[in-house]
Image 1 (cartoon, each protein chain N blue to C red):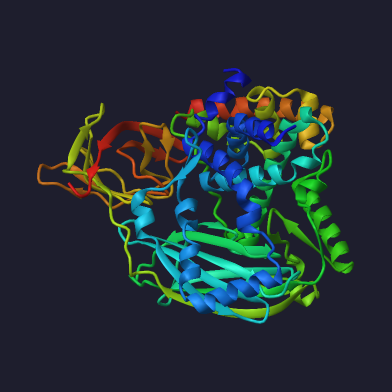
Image 2: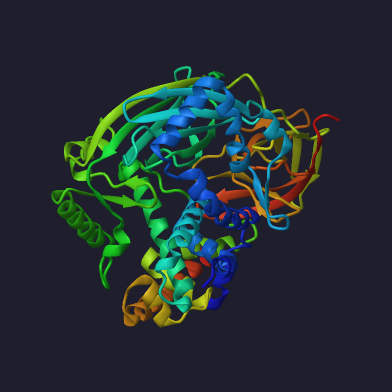
Length: 159
Length: 404
């Protein structure tokens, strides 16, 4: 893949990159940092990509790693007990109830759900990105759907 | 609702994120020559000779880092465009300090008193070819007051093997000081560097704690082999089991013999000589009445290319409870023309009764970073109650040139 083609495909992924970062990181500034670092790293290491078809999943994996680095760094800067959990910030034109319900799920549950239903990845592709067996992806998605439904019902009842 | 409705949990990708992606692609192209290019010793010597002969010429020849960093990538022209006011207000500097292993030169500053921000750019130059250095920059300290950083490039930590440009933006101090001091701790890397993070240790069915434990076990193992780990680009993983709260986290790596402290120095600069002026303002107070009968009165708005500061009042018939952690009034800002949402901080005062018997809540809104001053700003007023957020109404304020 040429550099130009690679860049064109990264630009084509920008919505996906934003949604993946938004699923893991509550603060917009952290999402931007993660995306920026991801793009830098992907470009620098693009020669190590063995198959063009795997590019999208490979870039998402880099982004997920960068998000984890930011989360770990936040933990390291201050003792976890003293660190207030930032309130997830939905986009102004998003459905805030849905965003908060999604964000209330554990990371291991919400990522496969988002990658499948929003980004259209297959179970096998998600398994490859998250480095877990396909069966684990399926069971996590089932648990995620159940919990999401409960969260949304809870929010509807409290309204 | 079906799981496919989850897409509604996310809004449109903000324009600034799209800009960031294209900008990052573009910056990668020049990252080798500008950011991390290793120069030969003879070239460094030549550059130093030029510096000695030409005085400030080196600083002049290095202009443009802040202007580019604070600019916006234009997809149509392929250029990074910077608000002219920023370019004009960047102060060129040439203040250097040199230790045994590293030379640091402060090259540019931007003082934004209207928006309450500062920006600084500097350059690291190793003095020995082939040296692997790790620099931790702390500060700036403004006349005795520490301030918050907002964003950094190769900052606060930086691993380098050649000349490297750095920049940071943050909040100005409350004491009004303009004399900024940056502190540099310089270490020499003594071991081979691995590149892993905790996600590399996640396995099916593993909890986060178990993955952390696996990561720590691996880190202890490579430490015993005299190796270090780098997470992300340029951040060394500290040995947290040996870290002490009263010391910098790099000290754990020094004790393990993986880093050697080689320099420790500081640089002080007065950034107040040139000021970034407001470029847009609200010409006169403006009122908006929402469906619930409440009023938002925007009394003033001052916009620099970096920050918008908005003073407003939310006026309501019933006395509202003061805002606290659980409930209150919140205002978000967006650029209505580009659908771009801004980072926004809004605080409110306790309600006071007005002459007509209604209640007024003063709202102080800071919107940043902007990069380019907008023509108008869309405000979304909402009330939060626990995790619930209800939109009360929206209002768009039109801005005029500050010079008018």
